[in-house]
Image 1: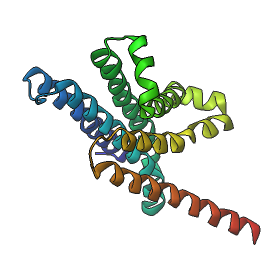
Image 2 (image 1 turned 30 degrees about the horizontal axis):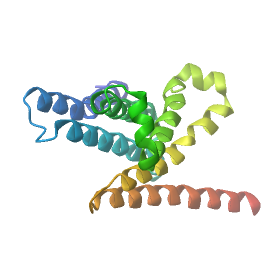
Image 3 (image 1 turned 45 degrees about the vertical axis):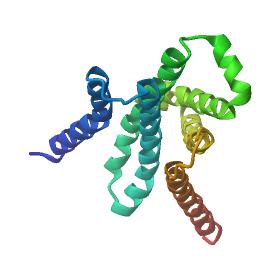
Length: 202
């Protein structure tokens, strides 16, 4: 098997793995395995997976630099779209199943629940990234594309804040995500400073 075919098979396997949480959720919904509060469980699990894919996407650059495998970058689009997919379902479950698409109810909840505003901003910022994820849009936007897609750093921070603020009881899981995102962003800052230092002393 050629390297090209091997990479295609690997990407297919990764695609199936990325889709599997959704398929498991569909199974759990169909067989009523979501517990006493199925809407809340569905909502939280979709949100968890959206944040997980954001974190996984952020690991690609460090992983590429460590392994020297440039092809890893080609997974960025897939992982980003899966993050948007799960975030969209997370939003739809909340606005559709929880609020029955009632704008009035949403507006009533926002003043008492600032985490909703943070979550909506994070999701709104994800939309242009999903729209411009194609190779055609990347070529069309040029340098602007790279600047635009740096919004993922802000989205990751907002997503963690959204998760932290929505907790009504102590739950350490959002703190784990906060640590992961902090480490990944610090890596980028340190690497960027090293590059600037090298350029300065050339």
